[in-house]
Image (cartoon, helix red, strand yellow):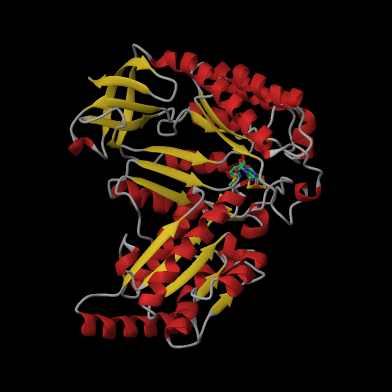
Amino acid sequence: MSVSEAGKRLLDLNSVFAKEHGHAPLAYVHSYGCQQNVSDGERIMGRLTAVGYDITDDTENADLIILNTCAVRENAEDRVYGRLGDLKKLKQRRPELVIGVCGCMAQLSHAAEKIRESYKHVDLVFGTFAYNELYRLLYQVRSGGGRVFEQSERPNDIDEEFVQLRGSSFQAFVPIMYGCNNFCTYCIVPYVRGRERSRAPDSVVKEVAELVRNGYKEITLLGQNVNSYSYGFSELLRRIDRIEGDFRVRFMSSHPKDASRELIDTIIDSRKICKHLHLPVQAGSDRILKAMNRGYTVDKYLETVDYARSRDPEFSLTTDLIVGFPGETYEEFCMTKELIRRVRYDNIYSFVYSRRSGTVAARMKDDISDKQKGLWLRELLLEQRETSSEWLKRFVGKVSRVLVEGEGRSGEGWLTGKNDQAVIVEFEGDKPLVGSFVDVMITTAMNWALKGRIV
Ligand code: SAM
Ligand code: SF4
Ligand code: F3S
C-alpha cells in the first residue's frame, strides 16, 4: 500500500474513533537527544495531526505514544529503556494503546532486537531512515498487522513538503541537511543517520521567509556539520540574511575542520546572523584529536578562533568536549583545560566518553575508570566556571538585545532569554514579553548567565 493511501485510511480510522469517543485520538510524542531529533519529532507530530490525531503531553490519556530516541551515549539509551519499562503497565491497562519507538536508537539493529525480545508491549519500531513511511507502518499496526519493525538500509529521500507542528511560536528549527560523513571514531551518528544529504537552498530560504512572516523571531539552522552543506553554507546564510523582518539566525553544528574565514566574515558582516559559533573541539591534544579522526589540530582550531576574535573581539564561542576518550592521559586531559582557558568559551557542553558498539573507538583499549572520568569532568567544569565568569564580564555596563524565552531561574517575576551571543540573560519583567526582543542593560555577570534590567 502506498504511503498516501495509508494516510487516507488512517484518517478514516481516526474519524470513526472521533465519532465513537467524542474526540480525536490523542498522540504523545517525546523527542530525546539533539535539536535535529526535536525537529524530526515536530515533523512526526505534523504528520500525525494531518491524519486526524490531536497532540497531548500526557501519556495517561494518549492513544498513541511515540518515543523518538537518541543513541549518542549509553545513558541516552538507558533512559529510553527505563521509560519503556514504565509504559508496560499503561499498555496492560489499555491494550488498544499503540506504543512506537523511532529515532536514532531504533535505527540500531541491536536496540531493535532488544525491544523485540524484552519489551513486547512495543508495537512499532522504525529508524530514522523510514520517517516518510510513518503512515504505512502505523496503519499496518492499527489495522491488526501485529508488531511492526522497520529497519531500512537506505534513508528516505528528503521530503521538502513536510508538515510540522512546531513546539514554539517564536523559535524554530530548520534542518538544512541530514546525516554525517565524518565518522569521528567515538560517534554513532553516521551509522544511525546515514550519509550527508542537503536540502535545496530555495526550499530552506522559502521556509525561513515564511516563518519570519508568521512572526518567528529566532531561526536555528540544523545539520551535523552545516559547513559541508552541498550548495554552499555561507551563500545560504547571505540569502537568509537578506530576508526582511525582525528576526535572528543561529545554526549548529559547525565542524572546525570546515569552518572557513568566509563563514566568519559572512557572520560578522551580516545583519541577522548571531555573532556566535558553536565550534565543537572535543579535546585539547593533537594525539587525541587524531585518534578521534577529527581532521584538525589544536593550532588549526585556534587559527579559526583567533581570526573570529580579530574581526570581533567579543565574538562568542561555545563548544562540545569529551573527557576520558580511550587512552587519554591526565596530561592530555589537562591540555583540554588549557584550551578552554585560552579560547574563553561562553559555554561548554562536556561529556564523559561513552563506548558505542560498532564505532572504531569501541575497539580501542579504554582503561580509565568511570570514577576517574567523572572526576576529570568535574575538574573541567570548575575550570570553565572560573574562565566564563571572567569572560562574561565583557557584557557588563552594555546593552544586550535579548529574545525573551520564559520564566527565569532567579525567582518570582524574573524572565530569561538569550542575547545575540547565545548567553543566558535574566531580568525582571512581565510574562507577556515572552517571544519578543527586549534591550537589557547588563549589571552582573554570574558564571552561568548575565543579570540586568530592561531599558
Ligand atoms: N556533529 C556535531 C559535531 O561534530 O560537532 C556533534 C553532534 S553529537 C550529536 C553532539 C556531541 O555529543 C558531540 O559533539 C560529542 O561531544 C558528543 N558525543 C558524541 N559521541 C559521544 C560518545 N560516544 N561519548 C561521549 N560523548 C559523545
Ligand atoms: Fe558525530 Fe563527528 Fe559526525 Fe559530529 S561530525 S555527528 S561528532 S561523527
Ligand atoms: Fe541526535 Fe542523539 Fe541522534 S544526539 S543525531 S538524537 S544519536
